Image 1 (cartoon, helix red, strand yellow):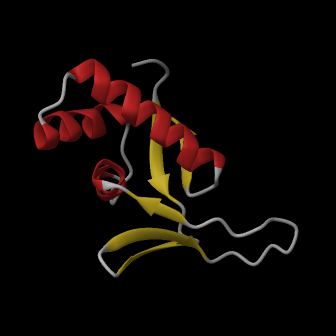
Image 2: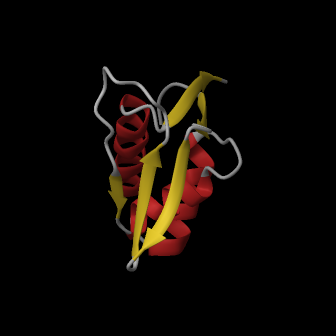
Image 3: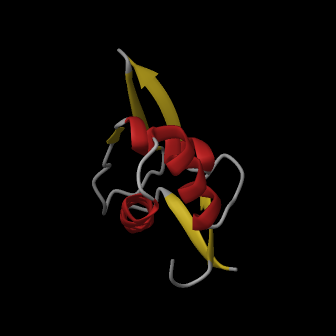
Length: 97
């Protein structure tokens, strides 16, 4: 893992289960940006769940390795990539640790 950051859910995003799918829905009202819903797969949902309490990436990686029995390197890549995408969409907030 690289730089040390803490990640927390953006309070302006709600998590809903609709017809068996998990969705992240921004509730901000910014007319200059389109609202982007994100549909979570099982790994994405597990990462989102792990961020219920603000956390660094390492505990999230450990949770993914334990839950899905995947190699650590793969979990690191998946977690880093997904956290970067969530941050890019302002669904999470990334703070220096």
